[in-house]
Length: 174
Image (cartoon, rainbow, N blue to C red; front, top):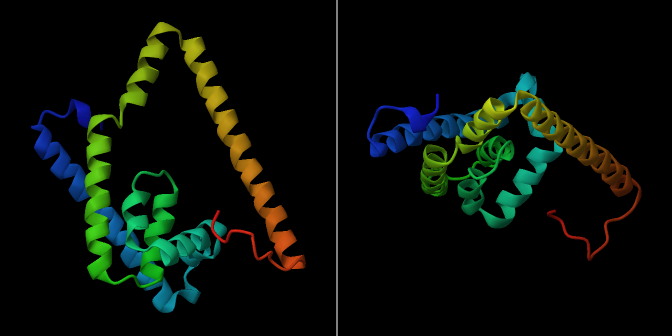
């Protein structure tokens, strides 16, 4: 599903990608709004109790709609920002322009260079499957190490905050 290989005019490719991401992001926002409305009985609210969701709420509370636009340049955090926007009941008059701007950025990025990494991986595989496998293993190991590091650090921070009062100079948003 590489948009670089679609047999369509570029403008139509961008419009298609825009519609896809706009629809998905709007549905995530609506889910966030719906979950807050009566969601103590729904299993999906577990996502809304995690640290990433709280971080997204803090960012939206501090900076507003631009966070929604910029979240489209992230991987993984985008869903939490969209859920938090709905959960915080961001007004549609602010959400929709931010959503449109973010969707335009995402579709332009995805439609032009989004698959360059996959193409590079295919070229490396054709050159040397062993080298490609080693690179992929190193990337997976690095990502796993990073995730574990963040989880351990998050737990240490949670334990530290529970026992100590927050310092006045400590930043609220990390």
